[in-house]
Image (cartoon, rainbow, N blue to C red; front, side, top):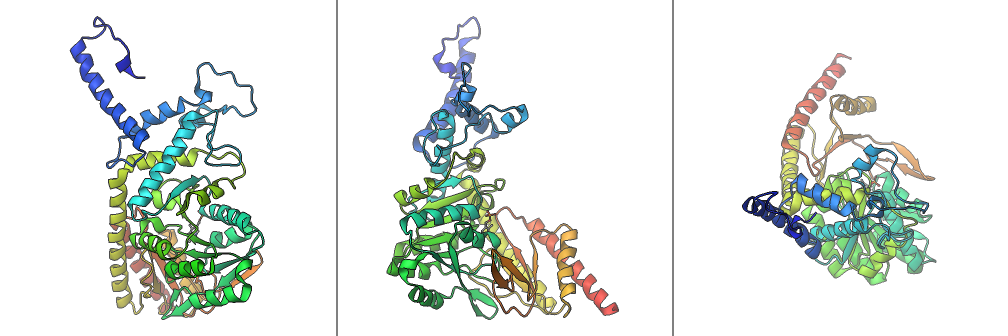
Length: 467
Ligand SMILES: *Cc1c(COP(=O)(O)O)cnc(C)c1O
């Protein structure tokens, strides 16, 4: 309600009191006006109350919240449980129209506005952190893997005869399943191993392109953020190849938005080569619950092809989560999260190196990975069970996300066998443990980890000596 436009009688409230209150209201209205007109991320975050007020105002623009509503359609955003309605701030219509995520929803002006504002804020954020050439991006209410599938499916419309996706191996199931879910044939390009660290095998990419023929290849598919000791793919070189051969290039940037070097590489790769789409998780990069991904492109109309490949009307929940989070953080809040993460990575790396040194192990030098680190577990025991036990000991003591990787684990995904699954290679010899410094991690968590890690290590070694 805009009290400014109501003539409030003086006998209800003295005018000087009222003017003070109205001035405060006006300043808030100006913030709303600026957000909607400029569609830029605020520098400093908003208060929860302010965010809530705007969100409720937007929801009141949707037909399900009209006081005079008369719904005779089959989808009227009726919500049976009040708790559910409240959880969604009375939004119920979702976003887009069946078959296009970016289209306006006639019954829901508020949801449409919310979704478009969210996409605009994400774009402003993405450009601001080092991707000024990003033409557009949008939030997809599906996980990263399914959003990659959506990109592949829209590429397929452009190149209907192409069946192969050349994929630099990364042992993360959803990356791979994204290809098979699109009904395409993955061509696995193993990484090049150098002193236990893994690098993109550019030459093998080139060879496969020649061997299979450009017209049969749907795209080159790389990954920036991954578990060490695999490095970020050399997206600059792959982009050059993509441009030279005129083959689309899809980048899985799962948690890469939080890393300056990766963001810079994306910008550079696009400038001297070719990237069609880059896809990142909203939960990993923006600290919201799991469920969304952001698809970005350097070409606006190409991006729209992806949005219009979506079959159905979409959930608006993820847009709401991201909208509220971005307003709450503001540009400064996000920047300081990025900064803290980078500092904590150095702290984690240095502490891990010290630990390795005093325990006869090494931290594998994967210098093109600035999120995840791998420490060898060569001295604990030759027995694989002891090594895996370390993983469960850590887990039982509340450490999550630390992964123990042992040689010769085999996994079959959709009919494709991966030898050494988890290690991104066939011939791992020494087991290792990975840990990551991801957005939101605190120094206290790192300190606690080393405390627990040290105790588990000694316990294991003691058990081994008794036996
Ligand atoms: C998290 C992650 C994904 C995607 O996970 P979703 O569950 O599909 O969001 C894909 N690739 C990598 C490297 C990841 O880390």
